[in-house]
Image (cartoon, rainbow, N blue to C red; front, side, top):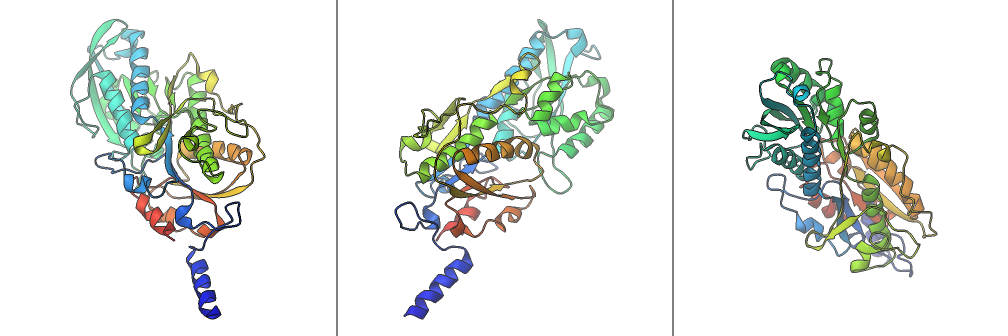
Amino acid sequence: MKKVICSAVALAIAAGTFMSCNNGNGSKVLNKDKPLVFFNRQPSDPSTGEIDMNSMNWNDKTYYVGFDAAGGGAVQGKLIADFLSTADPAAIDRNDDGTIGYVLCIGDVGHNDSKARTEGIRKALGTWDGSTDPGKVKEGSIKVGGKEFKVVELEGKAMTGTDGSTWNANAATEAMGGWATKFGTAIDMVVSNNDGMAMGCLQASNYPAGVPIFGYDANADAIEAIGAGKLTGTVSQNVDAQATATLQVLRNLLDGLSGRDVVESGIAKPDKYGNQISAAVDYIPATKALLAQNTGVNASNWKLYTAGQRDPLVKQTNAPEKKVLLTIYNSADNFLSSSYLPALNYYAPLLGLKLTVVQGDGQNESSCLDKFTNFGNYDAFAINMVKTNSGRDYTDKLKY
């Protein structure tokens, strides 16, 4: 009998499914019962945007942390509309044809965040025709400096790299070069679903000088570009609030909290260590999602978003150390690598969490999944998927 038991234990360890560390009272916790937070890429159908509630209901300790995508799209649209409302019509309409022509960098046609931003942009410019797909637009109109102008989306294109990765800055550089040649002075504005692609556009050797360009994410280099007068505006999705909320939810679950305390302690109210996130984070019970709010950033307020500022209300705690296995879908993603990951690495030690970070290539789910192993060594998991419909691929590995 002893040999059978030992063999079973050995097999479990080899498979990476053995039970983990103590939960604090001497008992063990199965991998399937450990806290799990999806972040940044919400489990969903890439075609319809429908939230994958099977993944979100994996266990009673599964949550999503991100930002208000729909609200963020509206914020970006308003940022653009507000800029145009006070702009000089003669400076914006470069070829004086009475039409504002713009080009659009789309991150990923199947990504909910990308869809929300494209929708927000098109609604603000009047080109929304009920679809976020490339080319499915109508003629719009908007006031520039009090004067009414027609608006035309000259071209919208998904920025996919040669390796298949989405939200690709190099693809944006190439696309911008082609657009500048193809459309010439008909381009009056450039809009992007994120900062990485916007900065990529600015790298094009023939980028038309002085043409307004808008991004999204408030990355450090984008903020600097606004200060230098190169980038017109961006949207902060409050990355510090997102990163801290991702960690705070895990901390709360590991500390045994339940119900509303999981999504409010340290977030909407101080936790037992005295910490509370400064920025507003809303909880959506229907989708088990915590969403940070968005703010527009432009020449008037960019200094408030310069690099190095951290949330002063989140401080060092005496929380017992717990281990977290965390995946990043793409090591080359500008927002995640330059903003999100540094924030995670800053706040994790404060909350007593030790991170092991796995980074993928942005193209193949296996680049993350193959390293998503040795679960018995960890107390909790945080997942950023390559594809939004891959939630089950991760939960299937945590079944035991």
